[in-house]
Image (cartoon, rainbow over all chains, first blue to last red; front, side, top):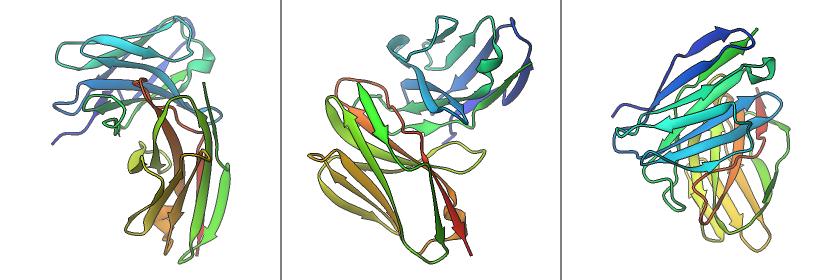
Length: 115
Length: 110
């Protein structure tokens, strides 16, 4: 069974650019969550999608957005990049994402560097 | 709202036992997860506690006290490969998201 796949693994952008990150969940998993991880802040929740609907959103500015497709694959987008957006972006999938059935399997992450 | 507190760093000796504590304040608490994250890698699931008490899984055990808002992860017979960050994550009913603590970085020395 393939795990959670994130692409690209590494990328470098400059301030003001925008970036799109992709996540393919484990087959059969319908919930996809996104997290930002930085050394100082730990794992910060971005948003969670289920059946193409965003069910929860963390405390991030509107520059951070995402979507989920009918095959459960998800993308997140960050527009007008800032230096502080440099981080590891982790995607995690779970069967249904509901309490009691919420074991997350994480992908290896996309490491974004903003210059 | 949610508040999660765990020590930032801990050190221990190979073969020893270490206990990593986590206190939390979570509205609509349902259960608590522990994840392990090695440097440069993704977090991996360790345990999930819903009921009070100790759950043992090999060298790792996890304890939960719902009334005290307290959990701990107990690692026995420490090995060098246990050097990692351990993340506590309380789960809320009705919220389809998992919020993680800042993590405890454990260093195991020979």
